[in-house]
Length: 120
Image (cartoon, rainbow, N blue to C red; front, side):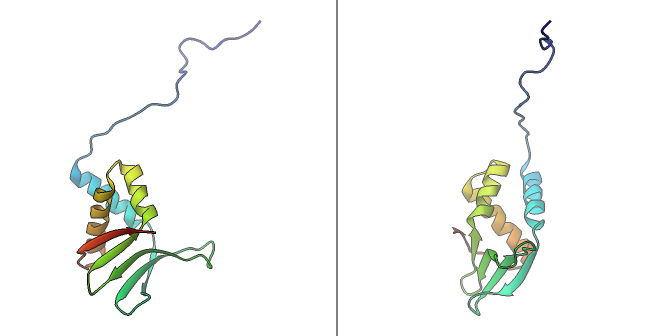
């Protein structure tokens, strides 16, 4: 005797869900996501720079600089992985991701950002 699955069993385990999230909630979610990473704040490669280096407990030889801010032109360089993670995770454009990152950086570090660049 051969058993077959009953007709009531789900054959498709994947479902697509769409949520309507307003702008302030999206901004809050992105802020929480970006604030989860712990950074070591160090002087940059130049006296005019501030570098946020991701804490990497597993491999101390591997250094990850996620953000570099230059004081004279108020430019923020953002590592590409962060930008594209926000694009994929929150279904926003690259430009919107950079804008959210810039706003988060300004609020968190109290530094004005005039230009945001996706780098590496």
